[in-house]
Amino acid sequence: MSFFGLIVHNVRARWLRSFLTALAVAIGVATVATLGVVTHSLRNTAAAVLQTGKADFTVAQGGVADVLNSVIDENQLARLRGYPGVRSVVGALITTTKLNTDNPLFIEIGIQPDKLAPFGVRVVDGRAFAPRAPNEVLLGWRAADNLGKRTGDTLAVDGKNYRIVGIFRTGQALGDAGVMLPLVTLQANQRQAGQVTLAFVQVDQGTPLGPLRQTIHRQQPTLTTVRLASEFGRVDRNFQLITAVDHGATYLALVIGAVIVTNTMLLSFFERTREFGLLRAVGWKKRRVMMLVIGEALIISLFGAALGVALAFGVTTLLEHLPQLTGYLHPEYEAGTFWRALYVAVGIGFLGALYPALRAALLQPLRALRYE
Amino acid sequence: MIDASGVRKSFDHGKVVALDGVDLQVAAGDFVAITGPSGCGKSTLLHLLAALDRVDAGRIVVDGRDLDELHSRDEYRRNEVGLVFQLHNLLAHLDARRNVEIAMVGTHRRRADMQRHADELLHDVGLAGREHRHPTELSGGERQRIAIARALANEPPLLLADEPTGSLDTEAVDRVLGLFHRIRAERRLTIVMVTHDQGVADHSDRIVHMRDGKVVDQGLGVVQR
Image (tube, rainbow over all chains, first blue to last red):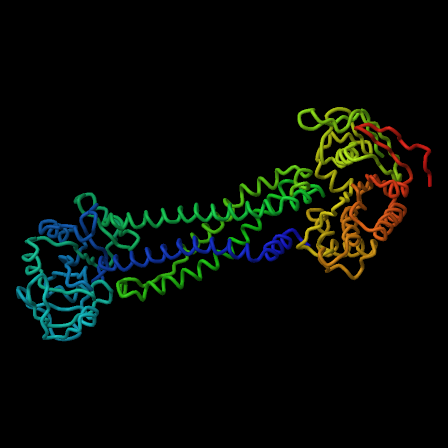
């Protein structure tokens, strides 16, 4: 019997206790993995707004709490268009409104009709709105689906009736679940004349993006540029907050899991005091007794990790099908999330077993053998 | 083999004196029984010989080594002594073979070698064919024989037994004592056995009597087999 074989045997011999402990670890791991997957997916969905229109990068006001609070004025847009290598800059005003109780965050995008194609918008039914039409809108295909609307129907937004002149598709969930209308109309409605929320920048082929973005940051310090979903936090403090909560939940899961494992291993320690005493009496070193206890906890934790990952898959699938999240949550299972879950499981096992292992190792063999 | 001189041991901050200047010499290959009334200190002496506890005063030398100056008491317990307890202290979730192997975990032996050696030992103590039985499936005598096999696992020169027959019926007692004699002869073992039972003690070569923490009779020349 090898030492590892003994560890596995001990875990199996007390299978119910091992399973319940693994379940506690699994809940911690599932929490971490689910939050990781959800945060990552929501970030990608939200960041997709910034990546609409096949832009090489997007410009927003830096440091705002919510990306939709970003304000870029006409002068700034003009300066962006003037940088060498910039082919086009499309400004879009983006806002949300409560359409009804089922659609509390309905997206409105104001854009000039001639910029629809460069913005990545494909009109799949009807036609585009006129540049200054006060009551014409294009409806995203997801919104049309959800609301049961078609081209030619009327849509009431913020107390105003609009005629749906066409249906559009952008290929990203948030945009397709909203409405588009002429930029000047939305600017007038929002009392934001001459302002946009985001600027989508396309560059000439061969133009290096890094130096251009650095120039913009240096010359227009109130603006920031975003190219990747991972940079989304630069323009959206809320997202930084969500990410912080995600990390906080990881630590919390680690602590709670470790406490549960400590509790279980301590109970096991009291039950097995004579066993540890015997092992010490027949010549086992303190270090080996410690390794036995920690090894058992790690095996249980790894089993818990596998269980937790399966649980996370189940929960995220369930969340994906919640009506409130339909279209927004597209679970993306990136390796980093599962590595973090694995670290959490190993951390829970190690931290949870450390104190019981120390106690087991430091037992006086004689006292332990007399333990009742 | 064993040279203990002036050994003192007390508990409860000196209030309970368990050993009060014990002298004991045991030659290699001897089978010595230590006997005396309950509380006379015989088990305490055995625990000191096993390096499970430390002397307050005096010294114990085993095979030329002072137990208070051992580099590793764990290694001494693993390699130099085999321990047999009254309640055999087998691990209930392990079968007979694994209960023997447990003493070899962490030694240089490979897994297959451990298994073969454990099976040989179980065969030697008359438990061939019971390798996969768990302690709860065996009689008291059989359990004690597993404990003896475990004590012999690392081939120690000294076997220390604390009331090894205390919980056994007469037939099992005879088998265990017979086993002690056989393994002593086969393995050139030195055996020190603590017992309160005079009939059991009579099976040894020499009987050491203790009373109130002192050796009152070294038993030299009393019984020689």
